[in-house]
Length: 482
Ligand SMILES: [Zn+2]
Image (cartoon, rainbow, N blue to C red; front, side):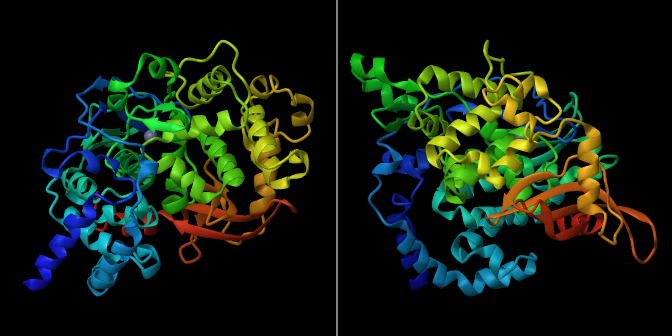
C-alpha cells in the first residue's frame, strides 16, 4: 500500500514535466480538453489519391495554453527510468503474453504496463484488442513524446469499427479525431490481405494526433511556435509578423504510411511519392529528425522551418507545400498555379543541408529515381530535367525488368502484385518492399506475401531479402479473427 501511495505521488509530480506534454503546464488534468479541431484522415489501398470525404474541420474552443514546447527545462528521462526499473518484471511478463519481445519494449516498461491497462479496459476495441499491442514498439520508440495521462485516456476511449458507409474510390480506412477508427467492410473479406496494413496506418494517425496530447494549428513568431490561443495577447506588430503554418498533408499521410512500412508491413501500399519525399527527408536529416517532425504537436511549423532555414521565402514554401499536398491528396488539396517538382524541392534541401554533390550521391539519386517515375509531365518542370532524364524510370517495362532482376534468384518464386518495389529506410538501412505472391514450398500452392529486399544503392543490388506470408501476418495480427 505504501508503495502504491509513493508511486501515485511520483506520477503527480512528474506529470507536468513530461517532454512533449506542454498543455499540462497550463491546465489540470481533470479539466483538460485539448481538442482544437476535428479532423478525419484516411488511407487507401489502391491509389495514391486520398478520397477522404470527411475533411471538414470544426473549430472547437481551445483551452488555455502557455509557452513553447522548447521552454521545458525538466528532465523527464530520469523519472521515467526509475519507473521503468520498477515495472520491468511486470512489463516483461505482460509482453510475453502478447507476443512482444524485449526489443519491442525498448526499455519502456512503465508505459507498456499503462498501455496494456488502457487497452484491456477499453470496451470499444472488439476483435482488434490484440492488434493494438503491435503499435507499442512505435510508442516505445517515441516515448519522449508521450503525454501520459491524456494518451492513456485516449487509448482507453479509442474505438475501432467497420463502417458500411465508408465509401469512395479505394477508401479503406479513416481516422476521425480524437477516438474513432473506421474500416471499410470489404477489408473483412475480399481485401482482407490489406487489413493489417490499413488498420496500422489509421493507428499511426491516432498516434500522430494523440501521442503528445494534441495536434494543433501552429504559428511561428521569432523562431518560436504558438498555438492559436497563445496569440490572443499578441501586439498588433506581433500579429502582423507571425506566420500561420500551412497544413502538411504530405507529412500526415506520407508519415502514417511510412511508419506502417517501417514497423509492420515492410512495404508501401499507398502515397508512394509522399513516402519517397519523407525517405529523402530522413536520409538528409536523420531518423530522429523525421520522428520529431511527424510526432511533434507542431509538425507543420517544423516542416516549414526546414524550408525557411534552407533559404525559401514564405511564398516559395507555400508553393512547395501546396505542390506536395496536392500530390498527396489531389481531390482535397488544390494544385498551386505554378507547381514545382518534387525533385527540385529535394535537391534544394540537399544542397543546403548536405552540400552541392547530390549528383554523386547514389542513395539520393535512387530516391529521386523513384519519385514520379512514369510521370514525366511532373519532373519535366524541374530545373534539372535534362539530368533527371538520365536517371528516371520512364516505362513500365523498364520497371518490370528492374524488379525481375532483383527477384529472379529468389527460390520462392516471387511475383509482384504491383509493379513498384518502393524504396525506404528501416533502421537506417535502405530496403525495397512490395506485396507479392510466392510458391508455398510444401503444398506448391501460390500464396500472398510481402517481400522486403535489403538494398545496396551504390551497386544497385540487393544484399538480402525477407518474406512474410500474409496468412502468418493475419494469424499474428488477428488471433481472434476479424
Ligand atoms: Zn491516412
